[in-house]
Image 1 (cartoon, rainbow, N blue to C red):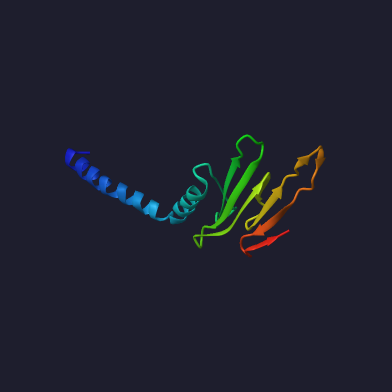
Image 2 (image 1 turned 30 degrees about the vertical axis):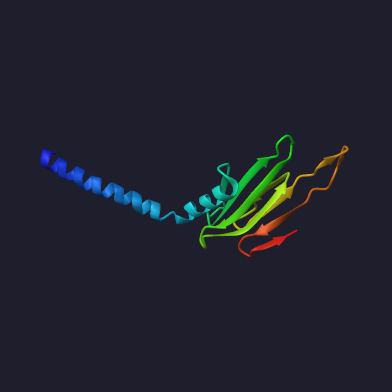
Amino acid sequence: MNPGSRKAFLVILSILLPACQQGRDATDPGKASYVSIANDRYGKNVEYIPNVDSSFILCVNRQESAGQPVVTLRFFVYDAVGHKVLFEDSLEQAAVFWMNSSQLRVVSTPEVSSGDEAPGGGYIYDARAREKKK
């Protein structure tokens, strides 16, 4: 490659690379939205769990209470297609996970009181139907 061709190649490359980067950033407005919402609501300690086809994002924060062994689970479900929060909840001593592409299972763990276990609770949230079921 002669010096003139090399210079022309570098000029073209310097124009194309920033354009490619801008294009890639422009295709992720949903990610910026749910990350921003999660940071505003929960701070930086957030786990992002997409469903199978990434059409919904589960944004989860676990927060320990100062001086107590209680963990508060805070989460919301974000619609990556419609770009909005569909559902939000906060529970102590609980877990949340995707059951399938549209349903979440929220499980409350049993509490121990005087050696006896209280029955655990929970529910299923269907993001497509926007319904909470016991």
